[in-house]
Length: 456
Image 1 (cartoon, helix red, strand yellow):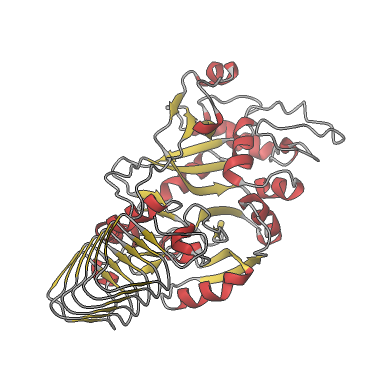
Image 2 (image 1 turned 180 degrees about the vertical axis):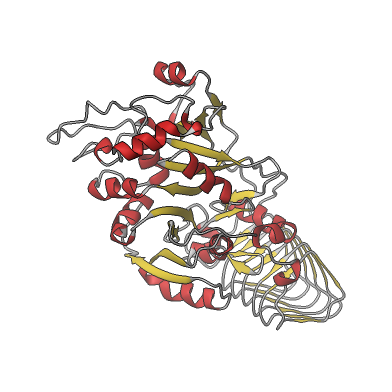
């Protein structure tokens, strides 16, 4: 992939302090950003994407008690990046906007913000291009992606799929509305002025917010001055999107404490006092052929969306179904995601004696014995697979031992667990440090030592 000069124009921040509250059964206190996707930790993928786009320095926001483990893991998968780790206290529940506010003094330029759980094989150059041409305040990446035919290991249950709503002008890709479907009951209202000034708005519900945002420096300055915002996607960005057509002549009084459209207590200066309105900015904007659609005198804040083609692979690994789906797809999507061959998914220091292994990733120092059959599986580091084992569509995390004559189908086996001989498991989730007794036959169960999880 060709690079452009992103080094001086943009900084990059990766959010990796999330606690993974939606899938505690596979984390059990470990860092979410280190979940295995193929042979690499989850956070490696957005970092690799930044490296491919010419970045050399990245700020990584992590929890203080997880920094050492994350640092050590990434050192085993070196990248050509200088990583600056910024830590947050693990005791407090800090949102993404809160975290960004805490590092605002480090942001000197426009910035690219990414979540550690984003995998997308789309070039960011299209987003950079739109950001420049429209002199945009914010550009977000939206993915046309669906998870099909995912059977989640463990007890059978229905997983709720979160959906977002986006209002987009089809002529300009102007982002005019964003919100969660769950925030509305049966209907919602679009302000009349949006229709009058844009002519047509497409309301899209089948798009995934990739949590990849390109943001102007003044937006960070505004966030720094206003502690009312806790999250980016849920609070700050919807607020900015709704403020695009605000009147310059009617800022809020500094003494007022208005409530925003997203129920955030807004204090201090009006947002338009941060947006650049110099004569040069106005002249550049007015002279651009890209801003002729829906351009007004008050068109100072400008938000846009880049929608990936339907063929793009994109996913956020923030639920158990998405974790399973990502690992099912990683072998065939890895080259497009990383510019590396599939061979990079098999550690060179692993020992593989089996001749029946297909579409499978293998971690460092793992030993796979002869007389084994392994298909479409993820095998972590330091695992031992004994003879007469059959694995199909399974994910084995690090330090897992599979004894002889074991058959596993569509199972997740977490770190340091042991599956004793002559066992057969199908659609099962095995927690960390758990030993499955010999001769066990189970379907659709979750077995764990953790107090919060019991066999079902």
